Amino acid sequence: MSMHQTISTGHYGNDTVIGKVIDAESAVKILDANIPVSGELKFLNLDWYAAWGERYVALNHSNTPVSFISLESVTGKILGACPFVLEPYYGCKIFSLAGYYYPFRSIIIDKGVIPEGIKALVKTLHKSKLANVVRLGPLEQEAEITQNIEQTFKEQKWFCHKVIHGQQHAVTLPDSFEEYTSQLSKKMLGNMRREKNKLRKLGEVRDVKYSGLSAEEWAPVIDACAQVEKNSWVHKADNGKSVMHNEEMFWKRLLQDADTSMRTTILITYLDDKPISYNVALDSGEWRYGLSAHFDEDYKKLGVGGATHMLVIEDAIEKGIKKLNMGYGFASYKQRWNAEPTSDLIEYFYFRPNILGGMLYFASQLKEFIDDQRPKLNRLMGKAIHYRN
Picture (cartoon, rainbow, N blue to C red):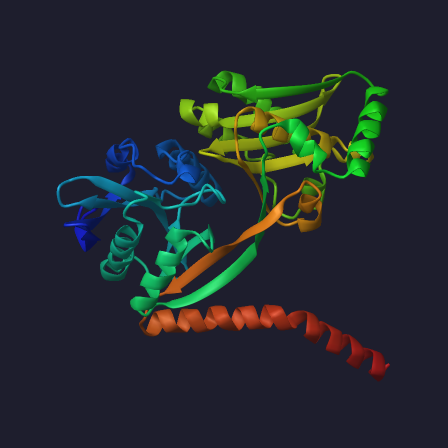
């Protein structure tokens, strides 16, 4: 199949939305087209996907490039793009939405033509035979893009398997930092002050903000974050959730882009010259995304993570940011910061409506059932061994 073949169409006003499968080189014109996306997606550009693609190739020892499905009107107006890779899976291919993690994964689309654009995208996937499995996400369940994806795949009779990652929490930020802190627990604020004073007794404490740096200036900042994460609980738990440690190549490549550099803020707390806490945030429209935050386990009892997080919030308010997305997980901790539940993050697996797709869908459902029942089976086996002895 030609990488420039027109596959499918959907309606866009009096024109038509045309889906085309193209390579990354051809996608430059799309991602430089200043597509009027929703405010929370304004950070997306070719560098996001170039950085992720290089990481994907390195980790998977693969030559699979990032490709795109472009969405255009018949008059040539560029309306959007869906970045993807084709991943091998037991002799099959999975069409997988490109990007590191939410919010990095998303379909770029003109906010004025979301229903029509998504219809063209799904029909392109349906008719092109690119893959028997389509993996999209994690995506916000309640987002307009996601709702249209669900509806259109349903119309095409694809099987759907959902994996729920968790419910996000977000803080609505007031106009002043003083107003924000007045909403927090006095006990929490008092503990933070006492912990900060204890930390100062151990050496010189410096809180440093980085933003809008050159690639060369970002490099030691990323290395400092990686050093903190290496000494954090997430690395010691060896749970595969490291974001900065062993991922330095991705961040250094990503921050070469001037726009991304300006949107990114990293706060690091140093004790003397040692980095002991960091927080990485990304701004887009009225939103700030908390992408990663960790602290050195040796200073856990001194609340360094919370102190750095407070600085990120203060900086966001000063910049006029209205919403802070804190991601999912650790709900009780986030609620202490006045965060409220928002949309679930869900990963969608769609299986083509044919014999192979049906078999793969059944296998995914069976695996989920076995995983859900495994704790019960382990308890029953334990009881059986107990009674037998």
